Image (spheres, rainbow, N blue to C red):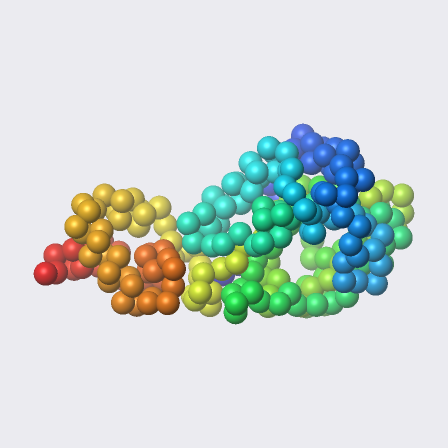
Length: 241
């Protein structure tokens, strides 16, 4: 599972400008940025966390897909029920904001959550991300992802003359979150499974249900968590009577 991961220049300058412009043009729209205070020392910010409708621009969904593809999350996670169901939040923090209290996010139905954050523009002073007491590097337009249900984190107060803009996307991990690793899942497993005939696929699905009887997505979890040779497993299961 992602503990803390950073990729510089994950989005372009043009994409960052487009998202910031969308925030500036909509921050007084009560349906997108309702006046609800977040938990923290101050509310000198606007956020879509409690949005009543989804109206993110296309660029936001393109970035979301890029993240899902990067971590192979598309078929194995649930998008967090935030931002009117999009899993996305836009935040604009004004100078003088007092940041947030150190906290660990609660788990939903016992499942870990990973937040994928992009600082579109850093504050002139402050607005730093601290995880377990350590200041993390979050340059403009870099993706930084971490487990918010495991790691103690908070944002420091902002000062200066520029606003801090953040766009984030959150996902809930599979039921066996402790076993999740993008390394365990690879494209070849999905392709090999897709090539099965219907009878073989049905046998594989029944095999998966035997291991994960309470999961709504047993085959996803089997594909994700199986530690052995995937093709050998397919041969063994599909050739059984």
